[in-house]
Image (tube, rainbow, N blue to C red; front, side, top):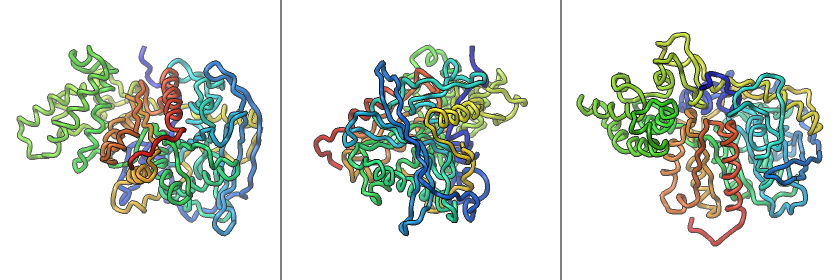
Length: 525
């Protein structure tokens, strides 16, 4: 039986404001209306400042991963970041897990975070990475309260130490007293601050010689690309690997408009995957392998379709009909609807049109899941069925876990998201925000740096083809192809919500780290 609305996970995308990379709309031109984290423009607000102190709890634990008992130490609390003048600038909340009995100089260390911008790391922490995770129903669907934590047998703690960090104005992270939030709530400000945290943590816990990794989800992937450059150029820190989940490095790749045709091509393979799942493709595609259907869609998207879009209104009526007929084949939509859309079907209309005959809509974060509009003639869905997420399930279990297991408490409210104000993209001037070039330059300077790009087939927030296209244009020497690994999962934006996909991505993370932690022969940059 298909599930209509009972999807359980919240996400970096779901919590942030509507125009963020992880909210509705996908991207905006930073020169005009920029993606935001909610509220008014950031800046001038000192009311959130706190007395910044190191307040860290250390506890000992054991867990079972892959059938083996793992003893580990947890550090939970706030770490003070200081400015050049030695004065406190911020109090950053983190939870770190380190496997006992290991040589820190050889033990991999992974910093991970969610996105938003403006989303806490509770989702990635308690859904995939940590030694405990929220217990979900079958296939990751919603369960009734009370909620429970279970041991996470698929945590990557057996292969890497882990540091969950909440960006500024998320979780318990706050500016110090007298420090304006605008110093942290913007694309470059966020990257700089996260770089300071990484440097401070490495110094505090003597991890400078450890193999180092970043794992970002959603807007966290945008952050990771910039952070890799920040660490290399301004902190003297080189990475072994960067892992990206639900990738967006360039907002232009997600933008669908008549002046930006690439956005339509980048979404098309996800339309095909979605239509396949809901049995809306023609018999020759529907009766075969899903991957084969997706591959055919890719070929059409970046060949005949993109060429036709580039011709604009110079297409003849016969040519338009021919393209619309082929596009209907890969989307499950009618030829007439596609013609009415000028061959440019945006994601919002697609999600309501695909199953209109059943009065059902499909999810944005996970297009397998179904909703229902009050008005079946609407061109937009009233809500994202995959965004109906009980924040209480994650928040209540996490706060209890923090108090009971990790022995740490705070009187502050834990911000899951929406407290960063208007996000500042002014450093990108009049172009789409992008950190792709920063990652390329970082890879050029560090020939040992490798990248893992993880995607869900049914992610309509950051469709997998947008990442493929970005990396295909990020560098043209063979080294860039050799050092980027793409992995795909039968899930949505948060692939780990599906228990089977969680096991798959854990395996891929372990393989990626195993293949990058040891140095080898020099590679051509």
